[in-house]
Length: 160
Image (tube, rainbow, N blue to C red; front, top):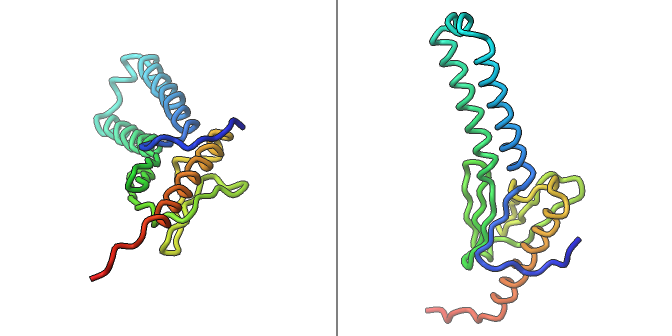
């Protein structure tokens, strides 16, 4: 595994394998469907009712929505904190809210431990990406350690 250094801020992590699979296999499925539609001939295409066409179109739109949700997944580190996008859900965390990040052996995704006692899986860092995922977890840990150290250095503002 290459040496890991702290990433510049802002920095975004995205899953590579899922994005490649969506583009490649989604593109191949589209090509096969269009080729099949052309290959059946005009007499068969003429027997397909508008309701059947609408059903196929509905399934295509639903499939595209799922694939788009998978491609949107990301974690963005900013000066204020982390922005986590899992599918169509967006979560924003300030740095003090995120205590740790880990990816246990065999786990499919990295997990953020939060200050409120809960945890959040991150679809943006996936173990299927191998060393790339390990580097991403280490980089995120470095950022968490840096922000924790900075918060210890800053004195609390005086109270009223």
